[in-house]
Length: 259
Image (cartoon, rainbow, N blue to C red):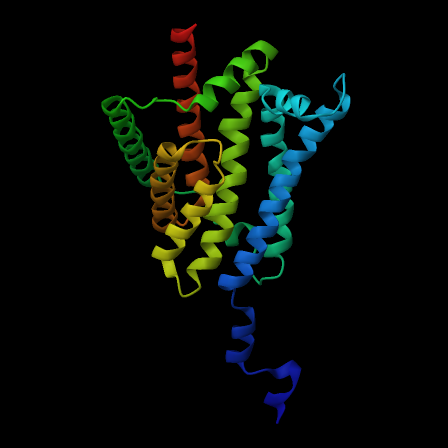
């Protein structure tokens, strides 16, 4: 009878209670909505602040002026990081898994880094070549507009921090960290988790047109596959940052050619 007392649990029961677990499909999806709302709220807070401190009435024209500034966009992207971190922490604390382990915050090998860079270059160059062949713009018009306003504000350095550091952290923790981990332990398994998390990540880029949606989705699939191979979200954060940095440099080059 001793084995039935809490202090003498059977070893197999005690081990089962210690096993890490995830939130599964539906709880991951519901918490995903909450994390997105937190991300959106963190970004909107910046817009609201600039609307309140700007001169003149708060109307639609003032809103357009504020949200089109490079300074506003940069700070809103940066403010999304603490919002996502807090929301993800609140979600993960309901599991028996450490925060870093749940999100895959672990280092990886140089082999996976080299593989990730090679694949990313192939995808980006492939889409660039297709853009030139079809006459589509190589860089999104949104990027050019934001860069020009940032240059006018003297905040290009802040734009680089926002796009190359803050955005990769918040987006990767959300998509390849939180969503991927929860959905792989559902009926979706790894392939479905990669596809669905990539679709959600693509949906975050509403500022782009349909053409760049497909490019973002392809990159998302590649990042998801690398997440599966390496078990590391730090890898996808780094690759995401490199991709965004290359996009910013390309946009600067195009802007200089159009000036």
